Image 1 (cartoon, rainbow, N blue to C red):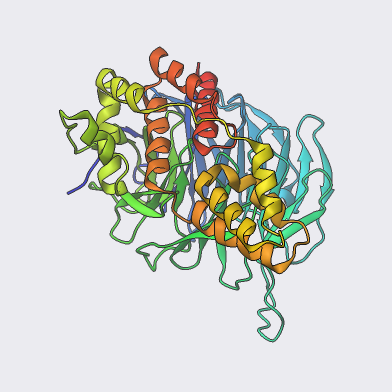
Image 2: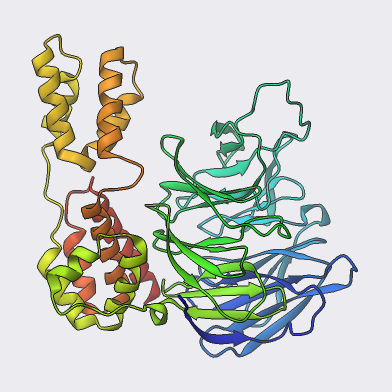
Length: 484
């Protein structure tokens, strides 16, 4: 049996009727907050904030009826409570109410990455928190924010589910994901022409992909820049649930999902494959959230319990004495690679020796040559077109940004087909094994997080800026710096 280590339980909701928990971790790791559904019988709900490291209860607030969402500000100094009857901004350490919004704002909320703008579902508005004023309000009847809304990590885009309430199947299928400009409410673009209901949207931390929980049992991973479906995962679904409960880790490479058998599964985003299963004696999870360190996961359950899991304690694998074999195994199936990765994180010294031996910054490429080869894809000479295709394909993943940019231009059919064929190889749905291993190795360095690991991340971040490993190392550096 695959399992993980339950390292802490947060108390306060025991024996509470219909204690379906919604959870939030503060960005600096100081606080854990939970709220509950009061249930169909009515009655008050509550929000509790604990000290994450000790489990000490800091404050408790009462909310009339259900608590839908909890969101910490980026500086962890305030907590937004989106409840059925009202939206409030409170101080997590004391419970002091900093601001209460009009009643029509009630229910779902979404806070932008800067902590300056707030989406409120009840009135479909964007609020300027510093001024305490509404910036604008949507009137589009098809827009229904709330759980179906997500901010991009750079704060420049707001993604929402576009719900067709008419259910008129005679009309053309509307794109069900819409991107908006949060500064003025302008509609930017849309994709996903499907009618099945979206229950939740969530950007990956790098903003490259949008995770979609669709009714009844599907998790979809869409590439934001292209609107292409990268993976579609069928999750063992519990018919008692209205939505698939999931969360994505801060590094963006793993997501956790509640499944039918009341276990929690950990999946790899890049491959769309299951990496691990956490099992224990508990009722089904109603909410999941990863800790800021990437190694902990908190789950809120129907019986009112909130559990913290240590993924590294779920390793279940031993590191081979042969370092080369270990390096090879890191490129294999997620069920093999991740227990090994977590075992390596528990013994930093041999892990760092292995990574220093095999990890090198991505080599530079001649962007001028890439542009020339792209131009040659439309050359009148067949031999020249073939040579350009072969060279671009050989260069691999680093050509993707330039090829994607070229596809935005009006192209002759021959050039378009060649670019699409190259992309199908160099930007396949699942990355090649060597790239997967490097991305997992960067994740390992972030888990270790000591000075030698940070130095190796800094070295990797100097590589070719168009390479995914370089981007991953740079992002890991930033997250580690923010934790200091």
